[in-house]
Each structure stands twice: as C-alpha cells, then as structure tokens.
Image (tube, rainbow, N blue to C red; front, side, top):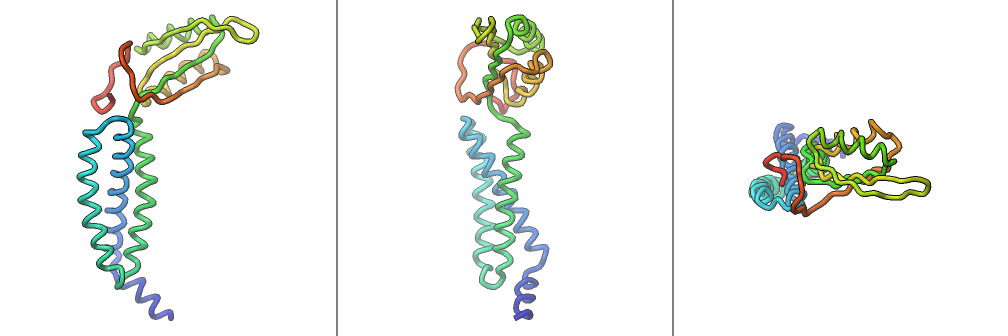
Length: 187
C-alpha cells in the first residue's frame, strides 16, 4: 500500500506539477478578470483575455487529462491551481478597481456644504439635494467616482462627519454630467 502511494506521489516531477499549478493559476486569474470586465461592459478587453485563457486551458487541461491515469497528482495540482487562481483573480480585480460607483452621503446641512466644497476641490463633481431628516434639515451629497477613487471620497466625507450615512453602489451606465478624468481601462 505505502509503496504504491509513494509511487503515485513521486511519479511526476515536482517541476511539472509546479508548472501545471502555476499555469492553472494564471488561466483562472485571467478567466476571473475576463468575466468581471465583460460584466462591466469592457468587451474588447474581455475578448483578448478570452483568447489567452483558452490557449492556456487547452494546453494545461490536455496535459493533465492525458497524464491523469499515470499520475493523479496532476489532477491535484490542477485543482489547487484552480482554487488559487479564483482567489488571485478576485484579489487582483479589487486592486484594479474597474468601474464606477455612486456615493451618496446624508449629512447635516452645514457639514454637507463643507463636504461638497472639499470634494469639488479634489476634482470630483458633486450634486446636492436638500432633505429633511427626523429632527433637522439635511443635505444629500451625490458623487459619481471611479471605484479606484471611491475610498478617497468616503475618507473625505468621514473626515468632516464620521457619523454620516454613506451609501455606495456600482453603476453600469452613466451619461452626461461631470466625471473626473479617468484612465484608459476605465470607461
């Protein structure tokens, strides 16, 4: 029993297993990014990533499938690479922060004016609405921002009013109005 288990574990070289593992991580990371980009409307980037992804998948999957009966460890490396690729892809997408968000803050009226001026000074467009809260006059400040910049907007709001009600939601379509200049990948 142990001789056969050791044989199974050592039949394929560590370098080959590592190559399968890394290639699968790269493939699934690309796949994860492709899906996210296509869902956010970046079809052209998604098509390029799909082409790279399918080439990697064909070569890696065929290598594993053809050698699986002689070395089950290839399947293990493939599976572990898949899981690691999903994690890495989603982590990378958070760092890239593609897309736009609508940030809405409900604030006391006087703080709303101050925050609006501060946000505009940072180069963001801000729209305000007069509102009425339970006990006082309020202001709703709305800012469209790139996801990458949204933390800065929220940080600016909290610097003035750490108790502000802040709502952020992703937007898929935006037309007209003022948007801070954005990078090439960001639409």
